[in-house]
Length: 472
Image (cartoon, rainbow, N blue to C red; front, side, top):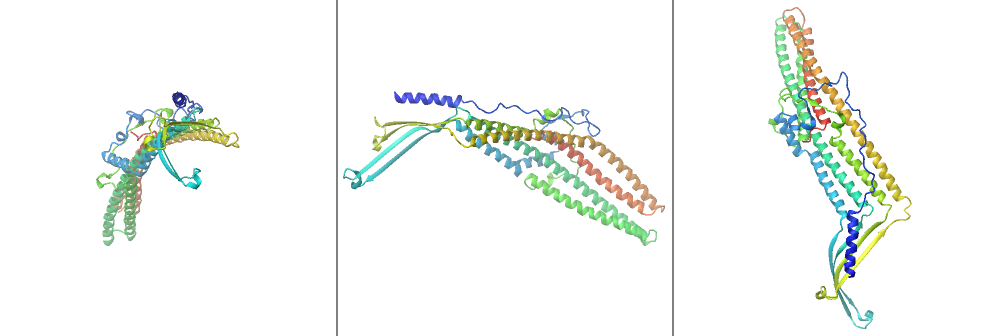
């Protein structure tokens, strides 16, 4: 009868511990987003809806980066990049820690068994004889199970869950960063390859011009000044070829690091012009666009974890009740363990409540409240930073086409200027100096056009990243 009563009492207490606890954490309320309701407007921003523009939420990364070669490189990076691998391992670690904390709400049920033998000599046994004592036992029960009346364990479980979810969001942020970094690295390599081709072409043309002027100088048609000016252009073009060759090598090294392995030659771009066109993107409303960014969701998970920790700190002011129970059998002989009359039971509840801790629990609660305030400020800052990143990207995208169009017009004008200056020199009307100036300006404009085309594509990649693209 006593055993039955104890069993029913344990069951009732356990039910309260498992299902009756209530968290003392404050009710979570998402802070208001400290950003305007609309994106910036002005001359730098194209606020008109772009025809055919898609929202990032509906645009997967392999649809945004339509070039199959670039898709291949990004896939390799998602499989081999070490930063992304570390992020995945951090998720596994956080998942394991959450599983440990979640298990704290359940009792640890186990079986223990043991045996002992002891020999007492005659002079200390009390009976004047040598005594050999044996004892064997088997016990089944609960060990130090905390009955969570005040929600301390539940709050810690919630904190571990939010930390785990924050780690998942960190992994998504890492993936977005890897996708955009690989795309920018690949496009940068394409632009530098195009600049290398331009410098090599320019060197070839300068060498041809130098040979022509050298021949004119030897026949007395051109002056030595013209010859030396042409020579400076050859050497300058040679310097640019070497510099662009080095830039291509550095781009390849960076791309290999981002991918996590040396990329094959057939996955390298040929030129920026052959790298495909990136689609237009609709920014949508700030709150809708930003609050789903993984880094902002991560900051919110950290805030929820800090909020749950307040519940654990508050529960520390109330008693902690733990329960240890056991049912078993004990006998002086191994063969008598499970015979009638050998049963034992144990019931050991324990209550812990520090009375004087000199402000330790109060300090823990104050620290938890301060941590929540810090997490709130970090969450708000993450939103403001994201808003600025999108605004900057919108400004870059809004002005990129105008810059490229203006630079293309400049290149066409300088091509005509160079043609006319060269014609005047060949007719003997002018010296070689106007032709030299026209060549310098044309080369700089053509190189600048490549840079602006790269900047336009980088701006679209930055906008896609800032709006949270690159996960799917």
